[in-house]
Figure (cartoon, rainbow, N blue to C red):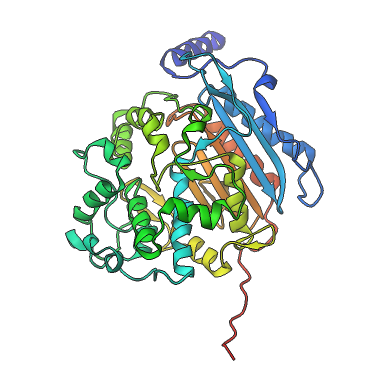
Length: 438
């Protein structure tokens, strides 16, 4: 009786679940970096633990919700795991299947926000802006609609009061930064003093780009290249991606179960479009060629992990100073504690630019109170955990919201990573002491 019920449920799920056919043998779809340091060494992670983490990823993949997945993990600065699995395109029969690799660029979606926010913190480090100064001091037109006193710090911590562009604004405004900024500046704020937390899915990035432009004379793309891409030796790590790489980008797919109307409505309000529309837009040449600072940095999993390793190392990468340690602290320090986010309708912990972990559990698994990073639509997770001396990037191409993939992701992959990398330090930064000139 139980076996018949189980088969019936599986048959129903196959009919309503949007996914792809997963082959039995995953080896031909797998790419493993020969530069993985292996177990032991400085990392303290055993070979069994590394393979257990990857087995969790394979289980996650077998649910059929993510045609392409790539994971990079660094512990104590050593890359203990860097692997990819799956198809760049063709997984759903739209063309001949193409297997991806570690060099496959993936759109980070909202994980891009963490990088863009740190560019603004770099502006402050260099003396171009003051974080507690109103945005309207630098961009006068932003003062309209009650926004005159909204500070840069409010903008970075999702308290600028303009969480989304109006529904009647044409979607192609994404590809016209000046027009997007005009709409944002004309909007009425939810508040005038930065007191309401409401996730800004798209709007904040266009304001950040203008701040870079008016204070440095550079585009945000040029500033990203100067501040992070070149110092960290990235191949990709740009807003949008060159046309020569368009065919190599992992294609996005609408997978999983159909979203119930309340969830679909919530996501449409947050994203400014339906999930189907967002996926269609994100696969378009226009999206790939545009600069959308809140949501379209293209990167490999290893490059994203490299960025967070630099953050973990107090702004240093391979002996080169990229950010001041105080700048890293400003960008990762909690703002206001956990509170209900009026866009996501979930309790969230933010810094001025990052989504923070939690205790007893949070975005990055169990006991991750000190972790900082960002979620990307819909199962992209990039973060660092100072308490564990851990940097991780998990990127994927499926865009499910409700699906059986959630269990192996949240309760297997993340927890196996965290269990293998038990807390080893207090999670606090040791900053250089201040010494007055002379």
